[in-house]
Length: 617
Image 1 (cartoon, helix red, strand yellow):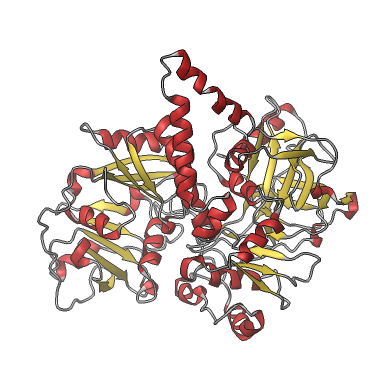
Image 2 (image 1 turned 135 degrees about the vertical axis):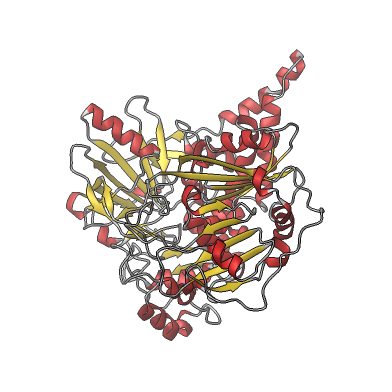
């Protein structure tokens, strides 16, 4: 177990995974733009320590933004090592024990498990070496980031928010962003599905003020645990203890009875009063790559601020993928695959959530299929399991499929019987899903590829020598026509309200097209494959935007959805990006940062997607 965040940073530096920036930088836009360039460079780039932020504290970003750094954060050489350990643990614990000797062999395992439980210790921790109470507890001391040009202000982006169920006393540690309104208050952005929101409702029913304690930093395993899809009423610090093979040591907060890790860098203590009116929070460039728009959330009041003497402020940047959170999600795939097999679907062989799907939009699953309809069972069960309930698109493949291989998936998708393999339903979606007209609820689509033969002969997709505009579509792109039967279409630059992809394909003589996806004209030529996949998943509701023609072609409308049109959402967000002024400023200062050859700004590419001069269309 690391002794704190600086201990982890020392390991990163020894491994060549940390770059220091000694030049003065601003937490407002500049740090985010530098970090975004680094996070989208090869392999996630390096962690960045900004030593001169205009405050008393340095800022650490991208600290888990690569496979190597994610493994180091969890204390292993490879993420697979954690998966192997969980498989062994669950196998030993759950295998039936026939004899007394077999049962006795489990006792050492039970003794080890008992040592993972968090321990409350007396006295103060390192996180309480410096104490500010009441008026001195000034949040303006902290170098909170304002990342994107239309963000509503500065936010805490890596908070570990501690709440306690007032009925059971069970602790929850979640990660809910917090917008700083002034020196003593922030928003508390917990969605209705989250445990923090459930605790808030319980305090509201009881007519009581809700204590909340927020921590930052410390051993990086705490930050990971706060993001993990733990079952409700299971302590996140139990997961941290398991990963570290030793208990997390907790000390009592100064102004309430909530306990926090003793080695954290910062502790922000306070409360939420459920009798108070909620306040407007946002806009905020989110992990979806779009702005989550203004909405009402509880107000958090600060009563105390404490920190280590050598505190480092950890922050993350969320925006168009891939960002640091893609590597956190990859760790979750590995760690929680075994529990999914055990508790939900034993036939699940492997699970992959592509970074372009921003965790919730896309999942690829391979299963050991034994009977007809099993893929339907898997899809419905996963859509009802924990945070998998937010999934929108799912591919279900046969066992042995290398699901992270484009070629393997393309071979299946090219040959799928689309009239038979589509599994459609409606269900819960992430509140941040902006494509649905009914917030938090929308369409879901799975493709059952378990009976598809990837080696079967496939009809050739026939393309015209040239095409003329039709059906509101001007351009086409056939980069994936041969291996996938996919034609990418671009709507007219005038942004027509309606397009007819079927008319365009028919009028121009396309034949045997399996998939046709329509994007905004502005995306033409500027977007990489990963960008188009991200846009297609984010900008669509399967019940409105995905249609199977009589000829067997899947048509997808992945354009931006004009607000107010029938069936469209009432509001539609812009892509989160840096302003041209920020991009130019960072370009001009790059040599001062001392972090290698200049990296191009990803925001230049997304500028063409800009819909208006504010966070929403």
